[in-house]
Length: 391
Image 1 (cartoon, one colour):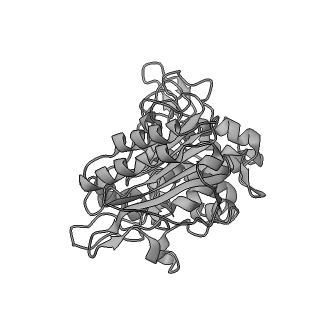
Image 2 (cartoon, helix red, strand yellow):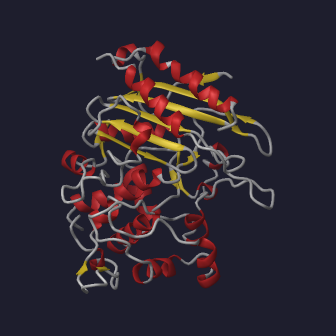
Image 3 (spheres, one colour):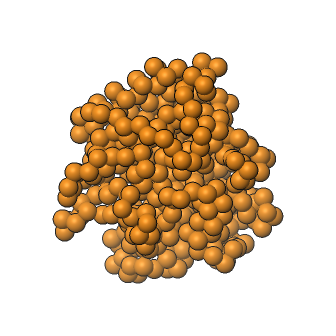
């Protein structure tokens, strides 16, 4: 199994040694990733490692696709990011609106989505509004997702307005906000509508203009099926019951069938080089190469665990920090200053803000079939990268 390395276009490429990292140790990741490919867990992957504002490692492994034909992976391959979209799309939009004074983290969501039902204690009748920050940190109490089949039977496909009304009025509130943790795609679909109601733009259009285009990212977008210059680079995901492979459309069924690819929980497609630019911007106070994504104080707030949340929750804003799900950061990165997130399709980002080191691993485990897991692979790669830091 051969790994392929090429020159990156987004960030300046330097040797690991020039960035204070041990190149021989970094290369240990190659065998770990190739072993996962050989075991059939993934058909291929791309790994990028960022240190400060430099790209120190970029390699492609295995195959971009194996159905209907076998095509080798390249470092420019564009992946369906799945839930990593929550971080690089929806969260960025929300935090920009916060720093622009258009919303507050402590605002109840009902200010922006009228009629959004609060949490209610059925025994006493006491109510508590659910705030923007509660959705960002997955402490809002909404269920993880909807039953897409039941929803489609009731409302039909392509019905995003019906979906937000369903979330606002019908979905249960399982616990009082800030008291517990339940990861929920519905949280970020709700935030999508906050962004859209405040800006008057679709989330996908706002993020394209204010995140991807602002940073000069050429291979990041929603709905690449509508982007002929990007579609040939996209890695396919699952083979459907009809035998056709899903290509250029988001894998997540709620995002695809209900929200038509413009969704707060999933829908961003990107490659390792573009995600490296986003990671570098966050590690350098919200800006890279003179292009500002967020202010330094906004970044610090985003990566911090809300003080009024129950201690066991451990989620920052949009990103994981130290929750029980943060195993992908491995054992050696900072326990409190590392943010991370996974995507169902096999994507992940880990960013240690103290060490200024980021690990981007894109591995489309749902191609050609949705099976298996790569939790151990993510953590092992993170450990190898962390151990390679010498200064």
